[in-house]
Length: 172
Image 1: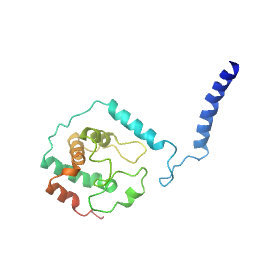
Image 2: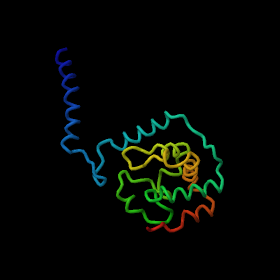
Image 3: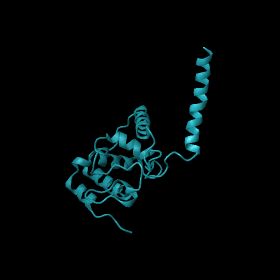
Image 4: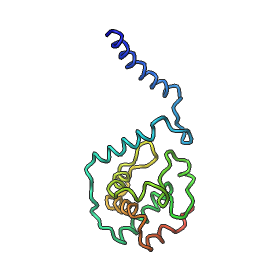
């Protein structure tokens, strides 16, 4: 019995010490180009989805209309496209240098498959340690919903909204 208790105590001391040393000695990857830590993606996604599920689901106070989607397209171009891209245009240098890589508007998984309420939560609150800022203090609630609806419907947008999104990116 003493060995069991001693083993538990040592385990409770040694494992946290190893964990602390891993970070303290600079062994943990911190550069965006570095390979992820073991279980990093799984733990981050698990925590994010658990948090979003815990929040009460909000319904949009806005109806999906051409006007709201068009407004969402303008807001997206101004605030989101630098990281999340525009249809048919090359990924930005900023996006290429981010870890984790931000989902692209018209490519791959992670944009149109999320309900607008989940996207709204991400737009409003941001996602820690990803580069995704929270816009709760920058955009109005209606503006965040307009962008969220645009993203939820990105695979079935009206032609005039596509035209807005397909315009060449501004170069300053």
